[in-house]
Amino acid sequence: MEKPVSVKKTILISIFTALTVIGGYIAIPIGPVPIVLSNFMILLSAVLLGGKMGSAVALTYLILGLSGLPVFAGGTSGLAHLTGPTGGYLLAYLPAAFTAGAIANRGKHSLFKYFTALSAGALIIYIAGIPWLKFSLNMEWRKAIFAGMVPFLPGDLIKVTAGALIATKMDGLIDNFSLSDNSEDQ
Amino acid sequence: MDMFLYVDNNSGLHRLDPRTKLIIMLMSFTVAVMFMNIIILALLMLLVIIYGGIGRVLGNLKRIRMVLIMITLFSLAIWTIARDSSDKVFIFSLEGLFYGIMIALKTNTMIIAGMVFLSSTKIEEISEGLVKFKIPYRGAFAFATAIRLVPMIVATSYTIIQAQKSRGLDLDSGNLLQKIKKYLPLMIPTIISVIRSTNIFSMALESKGFGYSSKRTNYLFLILKWKDYFMLGFGILLLTAAILLKTNTEVFGDFVSQFPWSDFSGKLQWSL
Image (cartoon, rainbow over all chains, first blue to last red; front, side, top):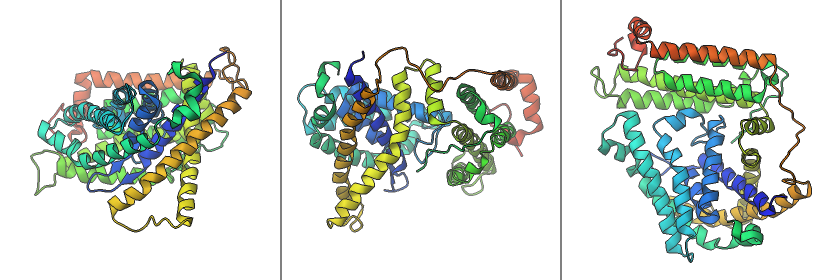
């Protein structure tokens, strides 16, 4: 018989994938580029659940989008987003979640650690997203950085700060609710 | 937000195996990504619409019309201004406008193909189809459960917001930062509330023997029939024709030279 915790983990992955889908629909207009909360939810799931489960959330989210479900920003979907100019940002969710989760769950938890983990995740999304944007639209580096990073920075700063605060408040709660019976499987 | 586009019909499209429909959708995505030609993309969109018409699911176009309109307007506005070309008048260019039409056709074709797939396939059929494609059952289960959980989480957050409002929390006043500060604490009870349900959910699953045996049985038994093979054969034929057209530079070059306004693959200098 499989370990019961696996069922809980599967459900947690589903829950955070659903939260990520909802995040894709929430757009806060702060200027020409709105803040979309899907990347925030992916990184939050990574710091709360760990790198492997965070990556699983990201992978499930990408498969949902690839299957034609309207889950990407603004209710869009499909291969166009994964191969189009913004594909780099989406595919970067996988390494970003893994890294953020790995940093957050190494040693003692703190607000600073969560902030660092979420910032590292956000940085990885840019590191993959900007070159992809540059080459897919044949832009100059400067233009790609201005189109694909600068307008998002204030929003990302808010997201990283908010994510670190939420993760600190929720520290240990997931273990208590769900994973306490088999922590070595983590 | 509505991800449940399924239309309960008994059409030929509905009766196809979900794997067939998934492969056909991915084929349409592939052709759409391969070409940067207005005529070919318009033909592909027409084929996708006919395919959806067979399943009598085109009524769902109304439900996604805002997304399609926004993508079209956004593509036209952005590319008319942003596309580098020699025919610029002030900041606008005709080449940019045609490029915007091509991008809008490409994106909208994929969205319509996704809509047709979702309108004719139940979530559990998609999940079972993914299992048949050797995706681990737990992955497919997470996929199906995530879709089902979206409305539940939205309802939970709505209840929490209403509960806090009834206690006097004013969420409507203040500037954007103040609003973010007010909404942020509401996220924590929402997340905790849905995580709490994990235990109940897993107990319910375990009580029904979820994960007891690695040999799983299903009520839904998928089997490919002659209609599926026919549709797959037709799809492969069209995909092969598209690949041959794309790779045969002479034939594709001749085609592009007939309609130089339609193509952005770089074969010819764009002209009207």
